[in-house]
Image (cartoon, rainbow, N blue to C red; front, side):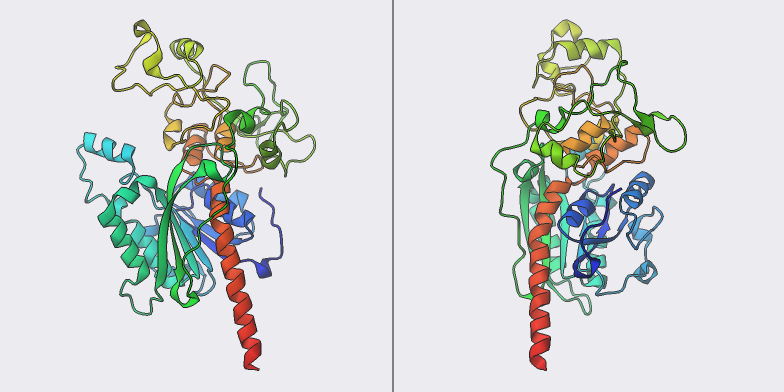
Length: 406
């Protein structure tokens, strides 16, 4: 459970739509915001969001955002949401998604996910937030016509009483903001026109990238000789097991990930798949950074020209490559650098910059999906900080102006 910090009265308020597990919510909370709630159609995402943000006002059941025809039913009025954030599903914009849909013979132009950003625009038009942040895959930057249309709809879309927004966008690399992962994402930021400022983007970068080893080396090895510390909730289900840490934090990053863990508490969600003998034989011969195409031909079960990256071993001293929701399928593209297995849910969460007190509530494969689809909280926090400063300055000016009137 994520505990609340400073007084809510001074906090900018945030509504997170297409919220997933809550990576964006957590980043904005850490930057000093109050999370009003999250909206998503995935039941595991909503359960995870609710339990990690227990003080949020909005507690909706899982539902498709397109079915929320009347936003009055959310019991949030225009003016109550300072910042609207979210990441509409992006498969039709991603390189992998485009290739997959073409193989399946699906029409890219008519896919409804091409237009989910319009739901985001609808929420902006209703709540008229001071700012908004929409996150998506970096490949959207190459869809010039689509990006221009999105920019136009956010800037001034012809709706009655639409305030208009100054809009800009940037592709940001998560590894430059303290996340141990090379992850490129597009952020579209809008600031309401009456604030008369351009959208601010984070300018501070870390001097050195965080490596996989720096992120996970304190987590226990997964083997039959590591026994769980205790179990949580209803019975000894594997997903509720809590394991003791292998050692004290070995890096500032690990200290940050464990800062809200109490003395004697173990780590949860540290679960990984079992693998068959053939997979383990491949793991054993793959060096760090090695891929399926590097193994001896006699061991290949798939075409190397098509599945050359099916198996990939992470590099201990470098950031991970991009985590994706595909981890829920097999995890073979994320083999532990030192152990002959795919990474655990908690290791994946660490690589995404989720702290250890953020617990995922789902079957193991769905946990991997939630983690892979998330915005890294540390990246979201970096995006949030200049917006929080902007809102604080705006409110200060408003207070000064109101006193001047008297």
